[in-house]
Image (cartoon, rainbow, N blue to C red):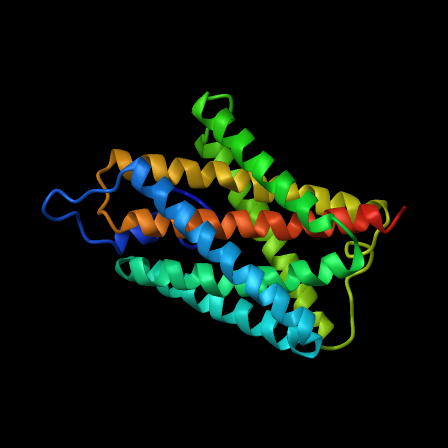
Length: 246
C-alpha cells in the first residue's frame, strides 16, 4: 500500500488515475526532471514576490494568505484529478513560490541570513534522506508509514486548532514561543516533515514499479515539492526560535 500523509501522493490518487495508455509510463528520471522544473518555477516566482513585498510591505499579508489558499486548492484539485497534474503542478510551483517568497522576506527582515541557512539545511536533509533511502538505511515499512501518517495528522490538528483559536485571540501556549518547549516542538515537526520525504520517495518508486501513467511524474513532483516547502517553512520557524534566544 502507498500510505502517505501527503494528499497528492496516496492510494486514492492512484485509484483516480487511469491506467497508462500506449506505453507512456512514469519513469524515475521523468519524475526527477519535473521536480527540478517545479523547483525552478518556485524559485523564480519566489524571487519576484520577495522583491515585490519589499517594495509593498502592506500587501504581504494579503499575498501570503491568498497564495496559501490558492496553493491548497491546487493541491486538492490534483489529488482528486491527477490527470490535471501536468497543468496544476506548474501552477502550484508558481503560486507556492509567491507564498515562499513572502514568508522568506518576512523572516529575512527579522534575522539576517536565516533564509540561506534554512534553504541549505532543507537541501541537505533532502539529499541525506534520499541517500539513506536508496542505500536502504531507512525503509518505508508499514509500521513506519502508519506511525508517520499518525504523527503528521497530529501536527495538522494542532496547527488547525491554532489557526481557529487565533480568530478568537487565543494562542496555544508555549509551542509558538522561543522557550525550550517551543524549540522542542519545532524540532519534532522538522523531523516529521523530513521523514515524510521518505514516504514520497517510496511512492515514486512504487509508481515507477507499477507502470503508472506518464502524467504521474508531474503528480509525484508536485507531492515532493509540497513536502519540501513544508520542511523549509518549519526550518525557518525553528531557526527563528533559536536565533531569538541569542
